[in-house]
Every structure is written in C-alpha cells, then in structure tokens.
Length: 597
Image (cartoon, rainbow, N blue to C red; front, side, top):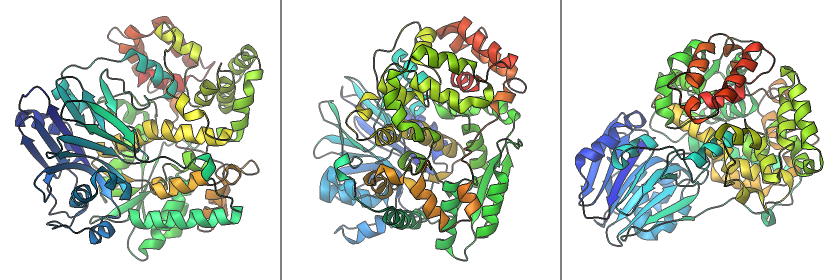
C-alpha cells in the first residue's frame, strides 16, 4: 500500500513543493519506504511508498512514455504481469504502476475495467487537460477529494487534504449519517466540503474545474442471477476463491494471514497453506483475555492443522486507553467499530514478520453471514406491527438478549430503508433526532434498497455499499496502515463478488444456516467443528470495561467541559446513557462506543 495526494489549481497559482511535502508527511505511515513529488505549474502530486512489488524500482509519481501522463498510485494490481504481456509499450520498470500508465495511454479511462486487485490512483493527462481518479470496485482502498472554484485536491486520507484546504468543519447532516451507520457512507464525509470517491467509480476533473463522477462497474443485477444447483454453487465459489487467494499471494515480500478461528479467516488460511506448499506461513490472531469472547483456541487449532507459525496478542482495556489519541489521528473521523483497536494491535504484531496479510473480510456481506440475514423477510413485513410495543419489549429485555433487542429496534423503525439500516444502527431515528435537536434531511440508503430483488438480496446490496465499504474496509485500511502493513481480502476480488451476486439467495441462507455456500466450501478444507460452531465475531468486552477500566475515560470524553459530544449533542441524554450502563440495568456499550468515537 501507499499514500497518494495531489492539488490542482484553477486560478493560475503554482502548486508549491512545500505544500506537497506537508501533505505527504501526513501519509508517511502509509508508505515509510520512500516518497516522491511532482509539480508542473498549477498541478502537483505526492506519493509515499510501502514497497511490495518491484522493490528497488517504480518510483512515484511516475511519468508515462508519451511524456503527457503522470500517475500517483496506491494499491496492488494482481494481474499486472498478464496485462503487461498484452501491451505494446516501452516498459522501463518491472512493477504494476507502469502497467497502469500503459493501459491509460492505450485504452484511456476504460482500461480500469481490465484490472484485478485493490487500487486508488490518479492520472493527469496534460494533452486533454483532464485529471482522472479511480477507486477499486469494492472500495478496499480509500480516496478523498475537495473541490471549489479555485482548487481541486485529493488524498488517501482526509488529514492529508488539510494543508491544502485549511481548516475543517463538521458537516452536521453527516453526524446524522454517522449515528445511523457507525460511519459516513460515500460520497459524504464528516468534514464539510470533503467527499469520497465511491467504490467502483471514476472521477474526472476538467481543465475548467468541473468535476464529474461515473461508475465503471456494478454488481450483477437481479436479471443476471444464475440458475444453479446448490452443489454447482459450492463448486463455483470454491474455484473462484481458490483463484483469488492464488492471485493475492503475488508479492516480492513475505505474506501472512490473519486467523481469528472463524470460518472465513480459517478458510482463507487453509487455501493459502495449500497454495504455498512447504513454504513457511505466519498466522496472527488477537484475543481479550476473556473466555466469553475469545476464539484463540480455535485459531490455534487451525494453525496446527495447516502447520503455520502462529502468533497471538492479548488486547486489554489499557490498550484502548493508551492508544486512543494515536488511533483517533489515524481514523481521521469516527468509525464506530470497537474491534479497530484490536485490529491495530494485530497489525503491529503481524508487521514484525510480514509486510502483507490476507484476511477473511467481506464474506458476510457478499454471502449472507450475519444472523440478521435470517430475518431479511421480516424487515419487509415488520411495518404492520406496532412500533411502540416493539420498543417497549426491547427496553424490557435483559442484556443477555442483545441480539433480540437489535432485531426489535430494527423492525420497529418507520420505513423499509430505516428498518434495513436499523440492524447495525446504534441509534434509532427518534434517538438521533433527540441527540441532534432535529431530524435528518437525507437518506443515503434509499438508492441501495429499491428495486434490488428479494429482501435478502437488498440487504446484501445495501451492506456491501455502506457497512462494508465505509465501515469495515475503512477500519481495516486505517488500522493496517497505522502499522505500515498491507491488508488483502481475497473474498473481495471482484470476480468473487460478481459470482456472489449472481447466485440465488437460497444458497446463501439455507435451512436457517447463514453463509451456507461458504460453509460448504470450508467443509472441504477444514474440520467440521470449525465450520459448524456458532458465529462469534470479533467481540470486545466493552460492557465490562465501560463499568471498570474505561469508565472514567468515557465520562470525561462524553460529558467533560471540552467534550465535542457534550457541546454538540444533548448532554443530559448522553449522561443518562452512561448512568444506565454504569448501573448495570442496561448494556449501552454500542451507543457509548459510537459517541466515544
């Protein structure tokens, strides 16, 4: 992975090397191996490099053979060697960056459709006067931009835009989005004026300063669903995932694997071990020293089966407190996913032995892995039930019935879109309005839930475009890059994603079993007890920590005199939330964590 940034001015002001250097400085963690700058009058690019392919070559920004194109690239093109053989181009390097330039010079912006991998890159074309930005199909890698009448700027992280745009203000409407999604879905961000290039999109900046974005890829539509037997579906997924893992091992540095002990990471690890044969494989897991949530013994079992050198780390409440300031800087904006602290500690651990790790991210959102997907149809039917009764029942539930409480909160919401969102939303529509003093005025979820097929398919489509891209993948990127580690999720190869959305829903949730087709694939590579055990997830024991090790920190950051939350939200409501949790009457950790972030 790398960090990229750039500025283009429309008022004739030259872009200074000092500005580019300051932007790159804020991306040093993304690329500590090297940095480079390019400026030509009113446009300039910056790049920081984490060397993975062609270690000694491929400096960036890089100029094309035509003399009219320049690129700044973050990512890995996994099929670059195959593409290279098909391009008539005077290559000077052996890496994947120059392949992107060759593709653009021979095929224009349409060349992006030939790529496999994860990427975010910018190409300036001096001949046409256009600057092009591309983000990979599933949104694995981030790309942000700012545009006004005088300037366009882009960067891998929001913090790197600040030297170019000056002060940052919070976008109030995006606060509503955050409280509903635990992050801010694209194209919006929490910073006013800063936007994300959406996944699978191409952005064009013209010489006159106009900016347009357009999709170059989308998931298969309902009309493209294949009529296959369950057995055929298992075979197709096995073949696609095996090919994806094989491609994801392309690197000139050591590659390892995250191994939580769950089905997805265990399956990826087993496939990696098979591909590598006798080559040494390092695997990594994290735990919390809490038998209620730890899966370390499952990870150790799978590691023993595949013969990997396994490493693990125990994460404590002290880790959360001590790393808070550092990781808040890396996040740029809140991501309400408490496991990110553990993911960072895991990345730190892995970085001692490898530069690249493979993970099982994305399987749940493509193949229907969460418990909520069993109730997809109920989301559609729930509008007939009285909301007040559902909310009353939810509040009366004990903390041990947290999953049922989430379901009741979700199906009690007033609209189909809100019920879909409610499964992950820490705050209901009414709670968000109370905290912020008024209702939201936009719904970012509507485009993803209308006309997308059956209820399960709609859920998966919405989650892959919001929860996955804007929460889990942002978290994965920030926490791995904070440790200068490259993360690759083989489930998110676009060929696997296309296959997933071309399969009928009855092979995803089947007989009450979530992610059925993936589990059947895993059954061919893993012991039955690993495949059949209940889904646990990467749970952090925050319910206990917010009453003990993190209690004072939570009260101070949420209600103290300098608290952003205390100044911006209803302070009394926030205090009540903390007190209810501290008393033990309710488990409010999802909402406390969302505000704490």
